[in-house]
Structures are given as structure tokens and as C-alpha cells.
Length: 226
Image 1: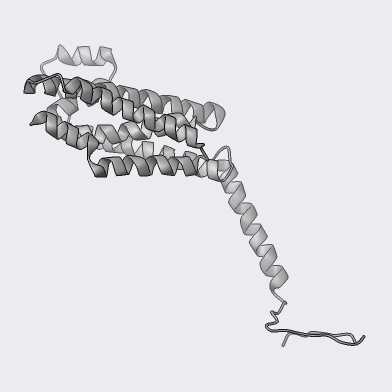
Image 2: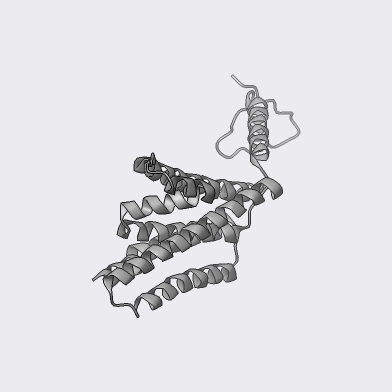
């Protein structure tokens, strides 16, 4: 039963549809080629299929839970690595590799699908392990008091998801506007406003003629706005 639930989560039509839509948005937003789409789809399918392939050989429920836990930790670590690299590329180069961005986004989809099947206590331990330095964890293990608030872990996870979404939207916006950073976007908007003001100023004393007008002879025609 446990195996069927995991498979259903990772192969359901709604899950596949969400992933496909995300890839399509990425293709359009970052002007990617069809081959890039095939490569990303192939990478994502291999991640899912390899995990299911392992699960198919396991029959004990407890072992399935361990595999689910370990896969979640593996993907969460990979997700954090990708986002760290994306942030440094944005800082140092002004933009991040689109392939890293879509891989981080798709990894998030898998994490969200697996998360409801993992106990809250385990999720809190994973979150604590990934966010705190090892030396700090060792000190806490040696202490009998634990001041960690589970609700704070959940809030931190949600904030991380929101931050990831913001980075993705930012990269897509910069790419579509052909800008290197936010300053370029602001400058672009200022220039557009100035162009609109100039156009309004030019059209202020203009009039629109509707219909067909025919001029004959050599007379001068003067049009006066009333």
C-alpha cells in the first residue's frame, strides 16, 4: 500500500501536468531550444524512474519509509546546492544558468509530492540538520534541553519555497526584458515613462481625422483644432 501511494504521487496526471507546465513556462521565459526541453524532461524522468525502480524491489513497509526519508534528504540537499549556486551566479555574473533554475524548480515539485508522506518529526529533523552547522547540532545533542520550535521549521520551509519562486520569477523577468539586473529594469521603466510623456506632449494639440479625405487643386489646407 505504501509503495502504491508513493507511485501515485509521482505519476499522477496532476503531478505530470504541473511539471509539464513548469517546463513550458521555462522554455518560453528563457527562450530555450526544443533540445533543452528534451534534456530537462529526460533528466526529470530519470530521477523519478530511478527512485521507483529502487522502490519496486522493496517489500517491507519500514524499509520503504527509510528509502522515502533518504530520497527526500538527497533531493533537499541537491535543491539547496542548486539554489546556492544560483544565488552566487546572480551576484557574480548578473544572471544564473537557466538549466540550474529549472532543475531547482522541478526538484521542488518532487519534494512537495513526497513531503506529506514523511512524519512531521522527521521533517523537523531534516530541516534542522540542513540549516544548522554540524558543530551546533553536536552541542545540542549533548544537551538535554532542546529549544527548537517545530512551527518555526515549517515557516522557514515555506519562506525558502517563496524565496525560490521569487528568484525564478526574477530571472524570467530579466531574461524577457534583456536586462542584467534590477537597476536595468528600473531604468527601462523610467525610459518608457519618458517616451509616453513625450508622445502625450506631441499629441496634445493634434486631432484625429476619421474617414476618407481627398485634396484637389493647389490650395493650401489649414486644419485648426476647435
